[in-house]
Length: 174
Length: 109
Image (cartoon, rainbow over all chains, first blue to last red):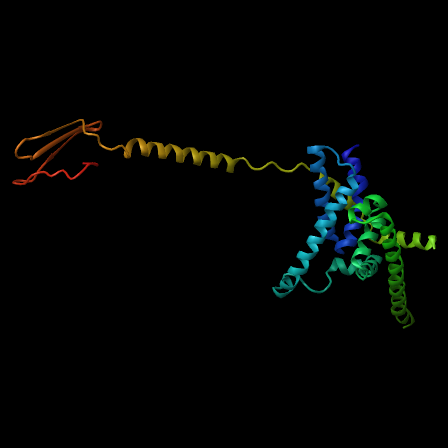
């Protein structure tokens, strides 16, 4: 197994997962970077883990959650001291034109456990068995969560698309 | 149903899809060797410890050595002059006129 080839294979899946998890491009990249660096260190010291994908996703899941908590705690202070503008930044405004904003909004409204399952299996393309082990549930329970998450996400995106159409049509008509 | 699911999954992946540049940056960043820790603070710490040990040794050897009289001559009857000879030379102590020397205890003269 080649380290660089493994990294190239895992990086896009991991970054997709992190983006869905933390909902912020730069933060997602930081979390993904930490997870891949941990894999490289582990690989160089003790050889490759049994399942490199499960290894990096486990680290990304834990660190992403930690980063989110830290961001939620520090955000009010940052706004208070004027460090962070509470409004959307230019990059965010650009991204909001894309589908990412809609998908992120819909993902944010899913139940945490369902979102995690969906991101691991669909965005991260992790196989069912390691994903179930990572979440500490059985494969059938994971399938159930996936079904529920897909159904809910489809509903939320449909509502969002309708709202977008309703906003666009008067603009076009004027 | 299956087609809907596929479409939804594809939409999710496409929305979260990173650019090739981001992926490349991520891989390069992960493969980069960690920078070795700077050497000079360690050298400085070693030199400081060595210097401290040396200074403590010198202090102990030179300053803390108690004067060990090897010979003391005291005039019998009226002790006015005391001569102490030790490793660092000879020390002679004379009492003031009319007085007498009283040795209270050990220590440096």
